[in-house]
Length: 192
Image 1 (cartoon, helix red, strand yellow):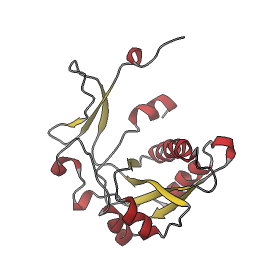
Image 2 (cartoon, one colour; image 1 turned 90 degrees about the vertical axis):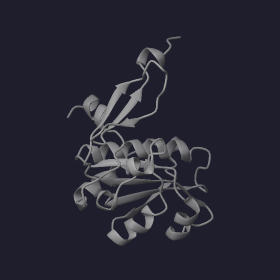
Image 3 (cartoon, rainbow, N blue to C red; image 1 turned 90 degrees about the horizontal axis):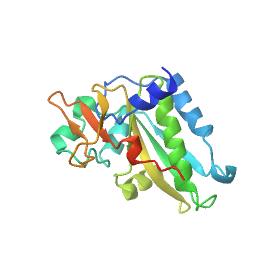
């Protein structure tokens, strides 16, 4: 698909087939992080791959899903959980001022690379960073930025215009497909 179609359809996905992501696709996702732009080219990020089912379950227990929805609609059920997590680690001894910016760029690259292969993702900042940092054995100079869940989505996620009420809350329909409200371009851009 072309770039604009990729951008329109790379949404957050929260329910997945229980089909593993191949090593070749995982390698592409990780290569996309390596190719990410970095402030002053310091490259302060490292990544932890979690793809063994028992370890994926262990990480899953420390994540929170779809805060705008009731748990029964927003959280993956047992047969819908992600099959892969990638933890984004900031190495604060390298570039503390720009780690967050670099992480945002890397997250965009990795989720776009995954979606180019039909693999959906959910960037999760709402997680128990203390427990996960302990689990991953992070050093004092390392900080968990986020974890990203991956898998082949079992639902749709579609962009819709912001409603007249001004709300930007996403919602699900009776099939539990997601609808993500976006402001109009004219509401977000000013020319100077």
